[in-house]
Length: 470
Image 1 (cartoon, rainbow, N blue to C red):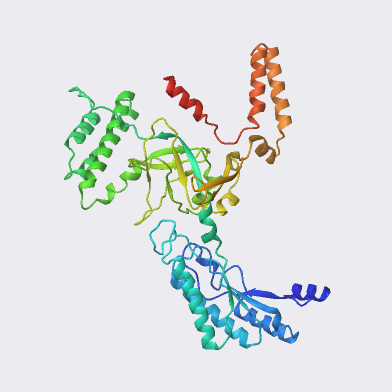
Image 2: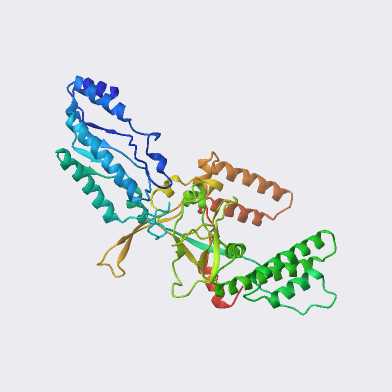
């Protein structure tokens, strides 16, 4: 306030400004600590009243024209919003009666996004609609002002997440799959076959819906026996491999039979996650969706094609960074958070996944972990007059390798000179041929112009498949 008054006097102007107040009401959800008495921003009630008295002394009460509060992002429960609106409206009316020139009430942000579609007060959802939110804001402010005989304010909102979340999505290509090695034919065991193999083989052949939990325990015991015998040198590597294959084959059979159960034992509920495959995708979690890693934010994930086919694979997503945290292993579900997402088996054709409701924050907060830079962007506009109902306004290239390494204090020309010295030295020692050295240098320099992500030539791959080449 002192700075505002100082500069207003210096420039001979009469300022207009607002104050943010700390409400007693708290939000609901992950960011509920953004409101309440211990929130980071805003003035306490006593501080607001001191502002009023200071302005009264200077005959400047008319300069205070806005009252603001903020409950925090992604408020999940409409009751928290109702309480805050009533409290803020009471403060607004009281300050107006004290002579403040209030005209605007800024209700801040907090309008949620229903990421999982459950319409609940879960942290990735909201138990209200946009229409209900708007109705409550107008109704409660109007009711308190009418009761207090105060003119209705102009209402301002700052719903950044609810506006921005829908404007962007991340499309990632799947590079490959890492799964459990259970695609093995049962073989007839010899009479002297190692005990773990006979144990697992019997368990697989005898499992039924009445013995699922018992068979799962047998599978665990059989695998433990195989690993222990191998460690003591009493089981061959081939036999241990077959034991692991039998274990995973039995677990997958148990999971299939679980569909016929009315009640699933707790120990078996983790089979879906245990048997899930890792679909490696050409992206960086830390660059494109850092909130998935940092605060376990849930984003809708699904294939963007083959939608007429039922997805049959249980999967988690892995990125191409070297960080073990570079993965997505929590997914939306109407009932609870799922440990997997259902995807299609790969079929030697490009397969793309969409990660939706990423909004504006993810791209801004993304970092250069492992030096993976910004991805390519496509700006798409919906237009009824267009043939397909949309048009592409522009495309923006993602970060190049040369740009990224210069951002961490390495110069492209210096690196190329160093590489040339090494190639020249290798050529003089007859370690490589001069022509090979030239090709190596050209390749190295050309890589500086490439994007930081894997450059997959899908067109060439399709041509090879059509010609029958591998």
